[in-house]
Image (tube, rainbow, N blue to C red; front, side, top):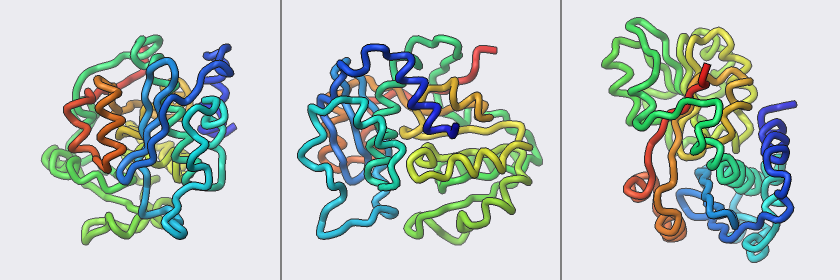
Length: 260
């Protein structure tokens, strides 16, 4: 099975009463999509507007029927070929994964930014799948060679390569940093396959808060994600079109590694 299938199966196995869990709120904002479960846990996924096929101002065919639906129905959307549904599905995966990350069962959780905990050595070739601009300076400051791959034209600049270069570039990497949005846009499998040589493989971002054990089983060595501190404010900010900067006071950056 692939990463998404295994995440869904693991979360269903961990939640024997999953049929009783509902989606209290579902927000598809301009910056992020947010799902709040009836257990009070919130999950985020970047909305990826640059990759969505928006038709007549409509992002999803499910609008009006999502809140109040069974959480398992949203979870299964992570397997859809419709990107808007996959985004909703990944946000649901992250909401259902949150309690297991918070419990620190079989994982080590540290507060702070991923870069602070990443194993970087001078001379490393670091490939970043997703143009995460705040990481560029710190990586270069450690004496690493940085190559940035990006899929969305709106985030490309003179220092990025298109993601069609993945097969050629990622196998050369000592360290690979992957945006959590790869779970939603379907690129995670290919990237992890190409990154097998890498010493360190990181999944990062608010979209990256999926059940860690499955990610570690597929080669990820470290996860940089967020812990929700104020779900109500997170929902409000997402619904009002806010992004990472606006969410910052209401989340805590955390880093997750396997316990052994």
